[in-house]
Amino acid sequence: MPSLCVNVLGLGWVYIQSSQRLLNLGQRAAKIVFLQPSSPGYLTKQETIAVLGVDDMVIRSLRDKNQFHDPLDEALNLGISSATWPLFGLLWPSGQRMAERMALRPVSAERILEIGCGLGLSSLVAHRRGANVTASDCHPLTHAFLDENTRLNGLSPMAYRHGLWGTAALREDGLPVLTSAKAATLSGLFDLIVGSDILYERDEAGTLAKFINEHAATQCEIWVVDPNRGNRAPFHKHMARLGFDMHEQVLDQAAHHDEAAYKGRMLTYTRQS
Image 1 (tube, rainbow, N blue to C red):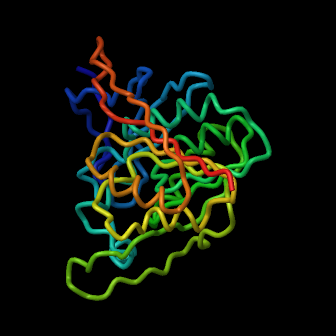
Image 2 (cartoon, rainbow, N blue to C red):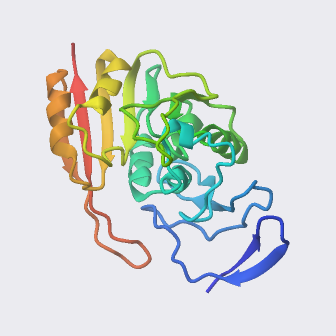
């Protein structure tokens, strides 16, 4: 089992044994290099991630899904509960599938938008290749993590915007949800919009489809990687009503050596006029 060097919230460095399997991301991830000692109130780790088609990416992420730090209620005021707070800062298998596809996309003058980007692996891959990409999310720490990961990879700063769709749930304490954010609000039209694992809740009102439509150029393409969460049918329906044709590709992969099994779909929506 590998040893990890951990700084426990300023209490000093200690060595622990970790038996947790590294998250498989299609290509095998290198072992964790170190855990960031200066994170305020939460632990992070740094990994080298292999994505076929580009140089390895260095990604700083949260140590695990148990991290939480929202002393000023910035996340809570955006409708992000303590349970969902850490989800933005983890690497997810569906994000790797999207990053692999982004690595194969011919670079052109098209405007690309990633919604619900989290750590923005797909955006970082596109940015490294010279694409015109904007990352967006609603979490108050996403922008800082994105800036740090562009720095770690020797890249120039990437465009980032605050993007929030749907009607936020009540805060945990029942008070009204505020939707203000420090980052500039998303605006403009894009030729390609991508999102991985964004169909995580039922959306009978079609708020996600409407959000996408608000930022989609007249002729555009939409990519969604969905790990079979069961909410595709209503999303298909709402996208069809907005004039999008859909193609579905199965991405199932059996477990192999150190690679975990994956089940999901690549959903591609196109609209020509």
